Amino acid sequence: MTLSQIEEVQGEIGNFTVKIKKNPRFVDEEKCIASGLCAQKCPKKVADEYNMGLKKRRAAYIKYGQTVPLKYAIGEKNCIYQTRGKCGV
Image 1 (cartoon, rainbow, N blue to C red):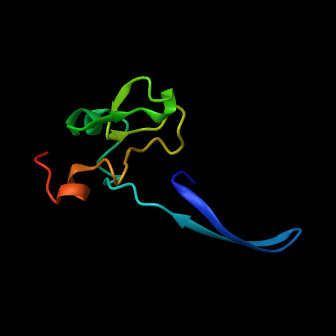
Image 2: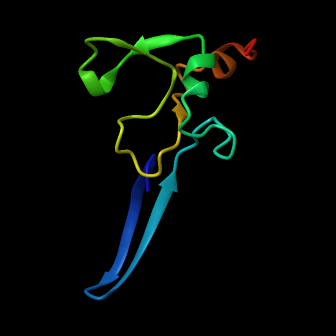
């Protein structure tokens, strides 16, 4: 589960209960598919963590090509709408 973190694991071998926190993507997963339009429309560029910050990427991104599910996300700190309350796109 991408953009998720394990919060808690309980149980014993063969019988586990796991509590997972799913972080928001800040995009509509049904509309923002792997066509590349979401990244093109997003105006802000940020350092690309996947490439050790050596190049820039759009704030709307797919972490790497083999990401499953192949869905876009926008980091909350990088999203103009989240930081300023409006975005023209």
